[in-house]
Image (cartoon, rainbow, N blue to C red; front, side, top):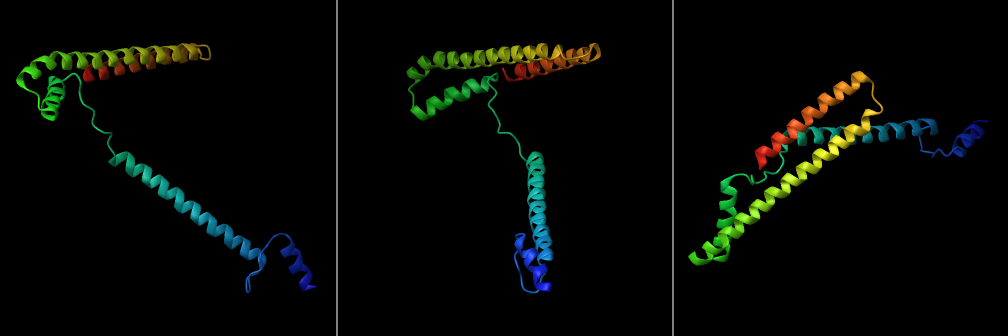
Length: 154
């Protein structure tokens, strides 16, 4: 009789381990996998929190700053060992390049504002009058934040 019950349990896919009943073995395996998953998820969470608080985005050059223009110019002078005559000739080229970079940033800001405004317009059809009022407040705050950040960078 005892062998029949044992055979039935083994037929269900359980693996026989000496000294441990098949049901206990299955429960033990689930506990082990659960522990592994828990350790992995806690490491992932802890790593994310630490990375968020410790990590800093890489510094970007401030293209508005006169020192940015000078930095670019000095880089050419030093790396290429330019003569004073060459330096006079490339100064307007460097200034023009920096101006183009700033124009590109302005255009991207305009496109970004258009996308955000279009997205808000698409949302309006789903909202109540109270939600529309809040959405407009959100839109204004977002636009002000974007414009102020771009003024700082340009």
